[in-house]
Length: 247
Length: 247
DNA sequence: CGGGACTAACGTACAGCGTACGGTAGCTTG
DNA sequence: CAAGCTACCGTACGCTGTACGTTAGTCCCG
Image (cartoon, rainbow over all chains, first blue to last red; front, top):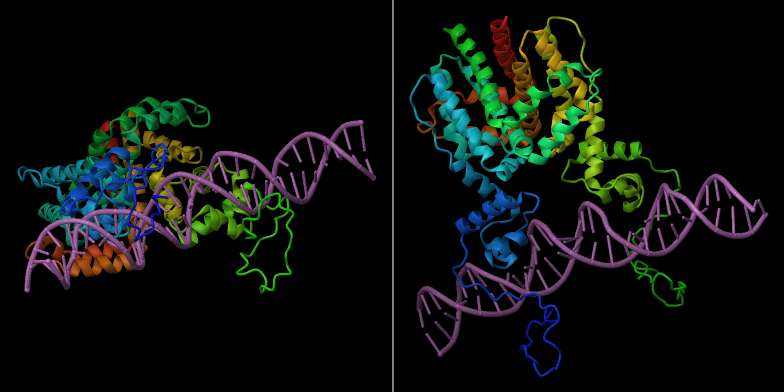
């Protein structure tokens, strides 16, 4: 009752009943005023919720409640959850600011990659959206300029057309793989702890190299950003080699 | 009715009602015999479902129906969906067979990486599970031997302890990033088509390098496996450089 | 050969999800 | 002041995972 009040009932309060108020009272929100919603506001709250509670805890109902609004009000601005997620992802990607433009081509390329990596790891939940999206992830409108920039730098370094395209693909794959690992493991104390305990419990005779290198593996796992730069430099070394051969 | 028959009601048929039998008849399955289920059988069907219909279409109910069994019967063997997924993932990883052990250390390392990559891309749905798992992905029991092997090869190449650990991290990140991209994009005709159309619609004046390299980008995107090997060689080049410097 | 114990298979129910559909209220415009 | 438009919203439906308790097949013990 009250919940399923017939649509046209004039809502007679019937307060004369001696009952101790309505039972659990579903906290009936009053209708939000007319201008209380807009796409940007919705995305703000969505991103905050995603960052704070994570992707799994996110739901349209939770977002609506956070906004103090009925669930279906969100559908005035977004066709559904998917579209909302895509908009959130694009908003985050749009925050990419290309780093300074000084130094040699490889230094600038390095800085550009790191900027993308930091952008990703700064928004763990959004990165998950990115990884799951079927679209060609680095080809969103927002990311296009970063892509163009990196390709130009690779060509500036002297790489041929095919090599530039493929080197870009390599950097992009490594960057998203790294960001994913950092977000899912390096930045999670409980995952790190599990890693630590598992590595300590390994039978040394069956996995000699692994057991031997345990401390180093732990160290490199703990510091995701440093590990990313290390791998990036490994790839850049290969790219430079390529460039020098083309020259 | 029939569906919600009170538990202890003596089930008076009341067939004297002139109704034309029970209405839609929910296709009441008869109880499956006692030995019709076991963990391996469940995992077989789960993996087949995942490969055929994808992760999104998977549900406990669908799996049970596929097995010709009530939904809750699955819970006799797995605590829940998560545990079932983890078991499926481990089963796939356990299928890893180390490649032949001939050739120089870097050639063997290369072959080992490619084997892992192929293992991943062979099971798209499972790869998604891998990417989403919070655990340290390459540290599952099943993957431990591959990890040990790669670390040993890196040390055989002359890398120091820290370098070996970090080079391994690089290879692992790149491999999972590549497999993810391949599964989400390269192997999906509709995603490729979208990429093609988007790249053709780019304003050439704003993204000159990108528009210029469009054909090469398309080509490298279409062939995921080749692109992986290219990137792998780039990284191996860096690793060899490291090795020669340590010597 | 009966009967009790064990447990695999199961049905029901519940809370939560995304969202289609239609109602309602408040601003805007005539 | 009325009419129309549309932002906001309530309800309902079909789906999900799974807690809980029931049922029935099997085996063992007396």
